[in-house]
Figure 1 (tube, helix red, strand yellow):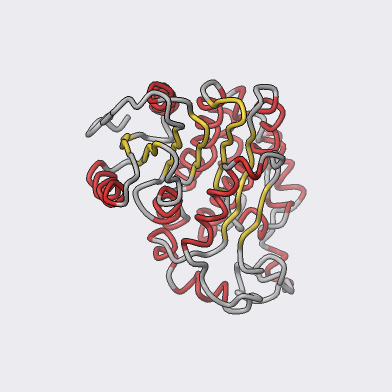
Figure 2 (cartoon, rainbow, N blue to C red):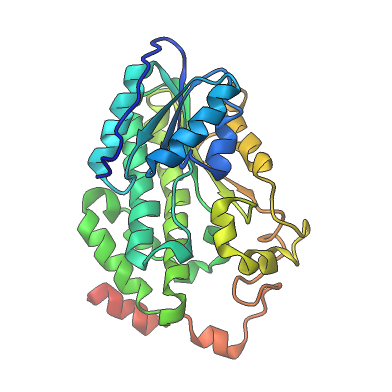
Length: 310
């Protein structure tokens, strides 16, 4: 658990609270700038980064607390939810924290993106106010990878048995060539996010709240910068052939957690400039027409069966 800085609380009481994970930069911080009628809780792993972001928001008249949290740690996320509820009624959660394929191993990507989202959903289900909304940030990668490459049969294990979920999904990932395993792990982790928001709609609805996912494409953010030329190559053949502007995705996220989107739940919104619609391949950076060699790298039915039997 991250413990460099735990909380800096102000306890405003009745002001609606918006929690934003990954709030120190990028789309999380851009969304925070739009939540002017909320008390914002910026969440991340680096205290200094969060404090710098909070200073900018306070200068703009937004009330802010910061909270250092390891999203991949269930207890850390539960502590975050309790802290947020202590500030006032939690009406909005934007879960934008995560890792890109260049930021960690396959297991780290699963833990941060898939299990981290599970922990956020479970923790905030108990504190989100009726009429409130939680938005999980997924990725267009969940829409680019063929369904045959996604072990959706294993997803329900995550709620029942985390070690089993991790073990089976990592076995599946290891079917693929080593050079693409982090990319496959990332796509699986974000497909899990889309699946989870759909699965959790009933649970949140029973409490009068909403949950959905948003799948961004390539955006001009610090995380997007990690992808560099790869991201530019991917969008070059899209109907909108550029990186997304961070304010564009921020306005979408702010709208989704707001009252005007009150009938929206259990679905995924793809905001990618048309990359998926154009059928662009994440391998070839152009409309996908698989070659024989590409088809050969997909897991065979026999390989999948081997994973299932262990």
